[in-house]
Amino acid sequence: MAWQWFHQWGSPRWFYQRSGVWLPWLGGAAGLLLAIGLVWGLALAPADFKQGNSYRIIYLHVPASFLALAGYYLMAIAGAIGLVWKIKLAYTAMKCAATIGAALTFVALFTGAVWGKPTWGTYWVWDARITSMLVLLFLYFGVIALYQAFDRVDVANKAAALLALVGTVNVPIIYKSVDWWYTLHQPASLKLTGESTLHASMLQPLLVMVVGFYLFYAAALLLSMRAEVIARESGGGWVKALAAGQGGGQQL
Amino acid sequence: MHPLRKQRLKWVVLVVVASSIAVGLITFALRENINLFYTPIQIVDGEAPLDVRLRAGGMVVKGSVERADDSLFVAFLVTDGAETVRVEYTGILPDLFAEGEAIVATGVLDANRVLQATEVLAKHDETYMPPEVAEAMGQGHQRREANKQPSDGSYPAEQKEHRYDR
Image (cartoon, rainbow over all chains, first blue to last red):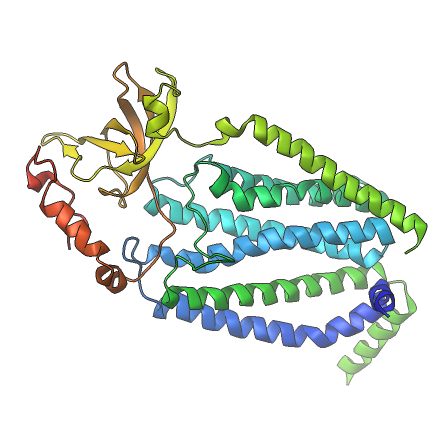
């Protein structure tokens, strides 16, 4: 039954046990793909005919930007599930996704600035793409700040989820900004439909990096959610049993 | 689904839809202001104001770059395929500035609709490829030809961009 599968996520204990099984696989696969992608992209892929080696920053910039956008949707959907079904774990996911998403958005903006100086001639320009990406960073900061602003957790959860939901309108704007307006930022090289304008020898390591970043994101999210769950349920019987079991293990 | 949850789900959807409509209307109202630069056709048609700091963007016309011998002064034409606008600038150009490449210049339009630029940025396109592939596709070849043979012959070939003519 589909709903049964859905509702088991309401159990922190079930989540903690399952995620503990998934985590080594996710982390291992992410580490492997990121290592392959970095060596391939930064050392083995050919230099660009115009930009030389500076284009290689796309191997961090593009995957970080993808995950910053996808992570926002994940955060907002988690917030919506929290609002509708009152599942605590969904709010935990939202809170953890906000921190990781803010970090990834910062990476995207920072690598873009580093690349922009040699390529465009400036670190920063207020065009539609870059400004809307900055708004995304502030939305992530807003969700984090709303958590800190309320003493009562249930109020903080609701307020943060509402901001996350309202902010979703920004994501398609970021994505389409380079097509809708004249911007300094170039249109997308990677295309969902049609042929990429990135040569195959440069595209393949980029795709490895993108998949590696997705797996890294999943591993980082599970890791921080597990820490949240343990902290929140620290008074619960199963956590005490876990701590006792682990303590015994260390003594041996 | 529980009726109470259904009710809450409706609220969630309403919040997303309402905020999307609001932001959509705002961006629609501001759509011209969100553009980073004016295109040459907008400047020639008089859409761009004079004596105000603005940006103009377009492709540098091949064979149009003039450089002064004794200063960093440079003048060139930018085009959007339909119209051209002259840009005058004194300063260092970005590495990727070249004839046939896109730029965005910040400055003030004078009475002759010449942009007196204070900043020139290179606008990179979304194409990435290794040099050998570019060579094979004839793009490198075309750029070389453009550098060697000025199409209008209005200035000596030595003053042209030799940056990519390695």
